[in-house]
Amino acid sequence: MYLTTIANGNERAWKLLTSGRAGLPEYHYACDYLSFAIPLRSSFKPLLLPTQQAGYVLQRGSPEQMAELIRFWRNCGREMSFFPAYQASDFQSDGRMRGLRPSDILLARWRGEIVGTMAAWDQMSFRQTVVHGYGHLLRRLRPLINAWSRLRSMSELPRIGQSLALRFAALPIINREHTDCFPILLQALRQLCSGNRHRYLVLGLAEHDRLHQALPRLPGQVYRTRLCLVRWPDTPESQVNHYLQTSFLHQYPPYLELGSL
Image (cartoon, rainbow, N blue to C red; front, side):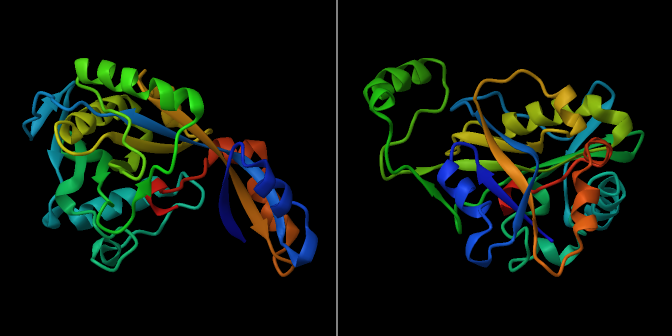
């Protein structure tokens, strides 16, 4: 069984992939996956770490804490479907999380225990999203939008041919009993990422993820993609149906690392 995502609005790809023609596998829609593009400010009050907010101690990760962090992720991952079995090698130069340093990870502690993480993953050195064009209306309004953005110290729409300076909000993993630290971590990460070359912080969550209930109101855009389970003939149909049950999706929401899609 495989996982794939198809952007909403890409009906041509959706119809082709779900047609079953030419030996294509079966595509089974599971749920929507939402990506939140949160604009960053060009100037922002610096966040001094470690700091304490609402009883949580926020601090940067370090190489010495990686073993503890991996244990925390694996414990929380048992409550989610398709959660990666992270290990130390994933954070090396050739690992699945390459480019993400321990110091890029923001963690929250409660009474000394890690209860939440979120990281600022900069992939500009090996993966970029380049603007190839704008719609007619947006192209005409872009100078006005950018002028308004400058007044508010917000990100401007880039030129055609310019890459979007994004940071991915990686590893948004929160202990079930401490979901109230999620907006604290998100706001702190946004503050840490502001004031530099990056324009947006992009956070991805499956629609059934319980963190949606704690997501604060923030400016920006939301993009939807369809998360599908792909079954080849040698995969039992019962295995796919197990994951597609509504009750299962709510109890064990899918986890996808947006920066790895």
